[in-house]
Length: 200
Image (cartoon, rainbow, N blue to C red; front, side, top):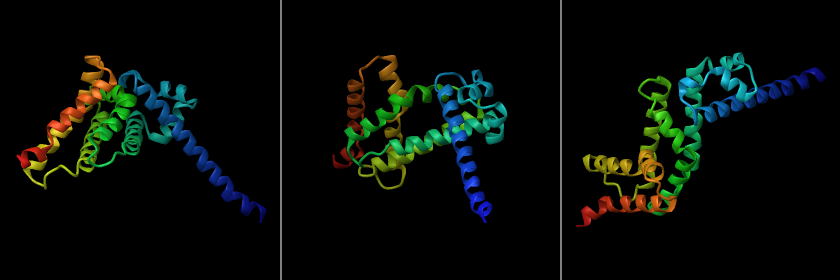
């Protein structure tokens, strides 16, 4: 009877240990790829960073592409959680977006620069674009036109005004202070409010 009771406990502890290892590998890979090119990071680098063997990574993810896909899913889920903003409040929306870009923008730009030659990154980029579009539709639901060409046009404008490359232009290339860059994005979003043209 005692062994019957202890077996589920041991299985539960084993599953928990597996999940901890998986998370440690994902976080190690995400950290490495946030500052280095995809091709420059080997499974051995990830294994060393995570404190596991290469075989452990292969067992969990099948290889480098599988690991990259899993990292992309992790980053996407974290972005979805962190980007909680009230609908229609432009300043709050921009502040939430900048909080995300200040933490992950450089890594996003680094990954995007590689999407034409790394299939795993291309898949991640496509997912990120779709996710950003869905976010825009949610936080700007009060101002977007009904479904149709006008809505698509408005979404394209909002996408361009909130893209990570615009953050990079202001913060990295032009060296704007965060406060000034946020104000610039707020002004841009306010200027493209489709309700203005409808009200005119």
